[in-house]
Length: 458
Image (cartoon, rainbow, N blue to C red; front, side, top):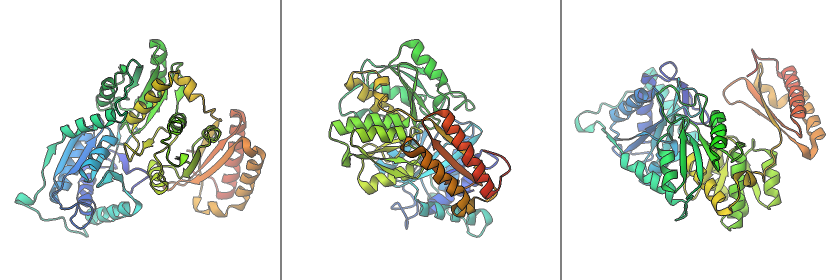
């Protein structure tokens, strides 16, 4: 198996088997937990958390076995959000892993790692892990022959979860969101208990839906992948806002008091404008990906806030934030990073920060989010015969330039190949849905003509 944009994923017990997870534990011990690499000694703790999937305990046991076989002690946090694992890794300066497939269906699962200090893996670390994993699986490297006291152990780290709760509550520096009525859709995922707990600690009046995980219902018609129930609940209760988390709670989609969605771009705009007004937006800039809507760019330009653009992925956003000394960045999907409090996306923290702005502003969330007028955006995944010829497909790029000229400053074209599939992603922003659809179809036809059609359209 190979690392994608956020760890390894696949169908649990088919693609991601216990055997693979155990070998990956051994590989992680060598690459992330060895005396010559990231942490001080092989016995320093390795933190593990997971979401609510049925396959989670199985893969957790296998991963722990691989780590312990290499002499690494493990701290088990249980069912917790991904950002809480990153927080504990940062606090203890140790590496860790999360067993989760995020927003994927329950049958899938995945493993993503953090280096000591809670940072997502660089490409070099991923390459090293892949290489070590392959060597273990094909038998070209010998497992460590540890025995007796040289074998690692596993213990609970529940008190560390309490520290994460205190950390998020403390992010408001003594402020609270007292009296705000909010509906939380936990998506039957990792935020089912801890999300409402934090919001209530800050004084919010919380109604919770979809917080009864049974191992198979994570993300099923709920949470950030399908916030329809949340929209209905917010309106029915007359709540001020709603927060929908994905399976591992590293992102959030909000709902305003009218039941309208508030996506990551709008959350970024609300928080950036607030930060700028309070003089805490470093360099008066934030980092966003190429997928951020043109409406966000226009809204921030009106407030003289600049954007640093990155490739898709919150790891890339964090890298740009570090490089430019920024305190805020994120993605349209709801991965938002507040650098003073986290070094990865945190859906619960993001929800808290958004509610804090709303309470201090004293206006409805719909008014705050209305600063962004989103342009219709169409994304088409086009399967092609050979994506490697994209850069030299001059006929296609001639058509792209023609579309860009027609749109002018009223829209945008983005073309990017998939890193793992024979797919090219074509994104169009235009003044109307009809115009966006028509231009996307035009470029899809040109792309297939240039590169050859694939088996089907993604």
